[in-house]
Image (cartoon, rainbow, N blue to C red; front, side, top):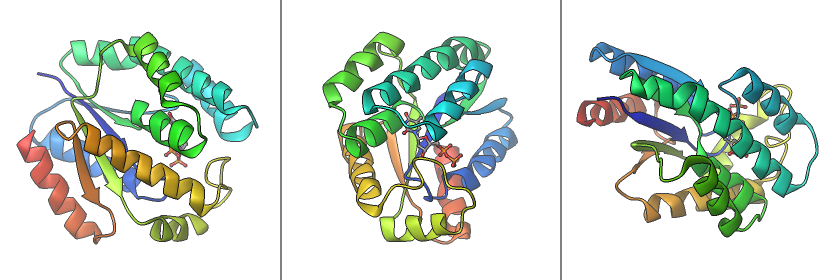
Length: 200
Ligand code: TYD
């Protein structure tokens, strides 16, 4: 049976480093795996990503465009792959909108929930891996990044609100979330991921 697995965390938590590891662990179990990302994942979604990462806009507009891209992604990529029995690994999904637009930008959770229901009904990830790290560590990692986007240029308070919003989501949905301590070494994190993938 296919599974929809999402990867979440503040910018600089290191999630992108670990996605290939998770994909390879699943492939080693004989699964077919599709790796995709949000915002993006479709030709239109990638155009919306360009706007979202680089153009100034109202937080409501940001939320609407995130869900517009998600609608395309769900219908064109995620659901068809799941229907073929493929494991779908998405670098971010709706928890990111609750964390960034709601926690970070202050859009009401009620608005985001309405968009969530509109766009995905009761469709939810089977598993969400939250890469969690103190903001002092993630911002230090980001400091080395070239050409930061509109989100990465935000201050520590913004990321602290996002981290807390993610942790609150994990507490609200304990069956779906697994928290990865991203302050550990790469080897330790890889071991944690191995045991999670074995338990899927
Ligand atoms: P990401 O792919 O993690 O950035 P990078 O390619 O730099 O590693 O995500 C892009 C940005 O989009 C990230 O700062 C978080 C933001 N984002 C939201 O604000 N809301 C959302 O719903 C999603 C999916 C992403």
